[in-house]
Length: 482
Ligand code: UDX
Ligand code: UDX
Ligand code: ADP
Image 1 (cartoon, rainbow, N blue to C red):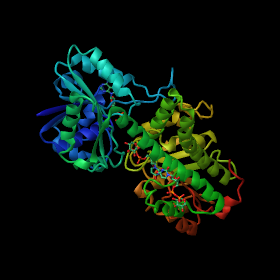
Image 2: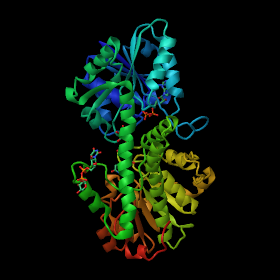
Image 3: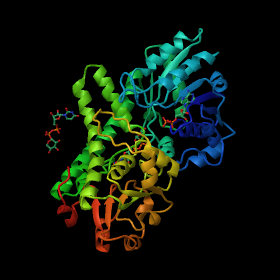
Image 4: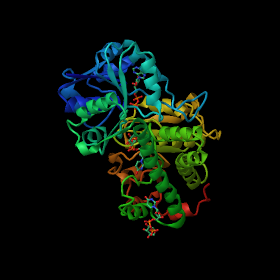
């Protein structure tokens, strides 16, 4: 029986290992983490992350060939294949602060693997890491190995949150990077391939050298984020000209060379990967003497920041340039629907912008816990571009101006304006007439996700702003926004 151990029971490690255990009954999978509450949750009925379909998969395998444990060293020592799926946040101080990945967790995991191993192992890089990390890990392992053989592979994960289980069941591709130049490397690649081939068609398993695999992950995320910044930049032009971004992106996406996916204009992209990976790419380019390339990719993040600012400015200018003391109902806080994850969610910057203009916020999200929202809004944001423009809101100010409630009707009652910041399905079918009746007039809707039926809401009486859609006559008459 092949034994797998995965270090890091997070958004990537947890679902990925659950699916491997589910699809490969002959493989024993142990997922280990330093966090005791996290492992306790994985072993309980309430899993630590919300992900459609995950509960069923975990329930089928847990206790049979899938185990969650804090006994890290024991499981690593017993494993044939060790996946490393620990967090790699952006460095916030020192060399490369704001851009480079912080590999502290990675390095400590690698040293521990070298320390406890008594038999040869394949070590698989699963977290997104800078190009050439595998090489650094190889060095740590071989210099501390006491004669044991280690083969390092890069096997980046492409799952998206909210669809992790379907993405893992039916991946567009599985990428395995390794030392193709030597027999040991080739054998390691084959061993990992033998796992995936149990449910993934052969032709979708791509084997490359280590650096191609590492760079492909960063490039894929950069390309995806770039599509969103591209369509978001066009959304600003649509509002200025009277074009409709949904019509434009649909027409553009019909070109098979472009494709129709990932062209939804929004208040901005969020999530733990896009900004972090692009900053990483930017840093690598700068370190390799490629400032033009670095600046090209930086612009993708700048447009994302611009889109969030634009949304806040549009709201404030539409409401007579003052939202001081006005109640604003916020629908959605997670970075996308079907996840409770708030990492880099555009809602944080938008809410901070509104709080900076002294609004009172009442927030509803179906999955994000109240404590998380309070924490996110009072945590200082790292100023990645050293522009000095990030807004910091104190814990006291957040406590005084923010309320978290448990349904959309409560959030919007007596609100001067509503902001939709996440595209949860339930926001499509709310009783907007009832909501309108419970709001002071004029009642505003600022739809940052193009969720509502603009014509229908205008008929009810709302003044509606929807990203990249032709402007309401009311908004057109308001002062121009920056
Ligand atoms: C992303 C990649 O999709 C995935 O392949 C990689 O492994 C991790 O990073 P994730 O961040 O989970 O996944 O979600 P994704 O669906 O890519 O959405 C990222 C952000 O972009 C969200 O805030 C989403 O709302 C936004 N988005 C997405 C848009 O604004 N418009 C779109 O058309 C698509
Ligand atoms: C383009 C558009 O494709 C077409 O839809 C529009 O109507 C007119 O402009 P064209 O300029 O004739 O058509 O050729 P295209 O195939 O798009 O190539 C344009 C340039 O891009 C060429 O120099 C081509 O060599 C280059 N190119 C194209 C690349 O460098 N890499 C690619 O992957 C594709
Ligand atoms: P991702 O989205 O990449 O999966 P997460 O932050 O959700 O990131 O998960 C990473 C997990 O890795 C966390 O649960 C964290 O506790 C765990 N972790 C970090 N360092 C170590 C380590 N040295 N040993 C074991 N687990 C670790």
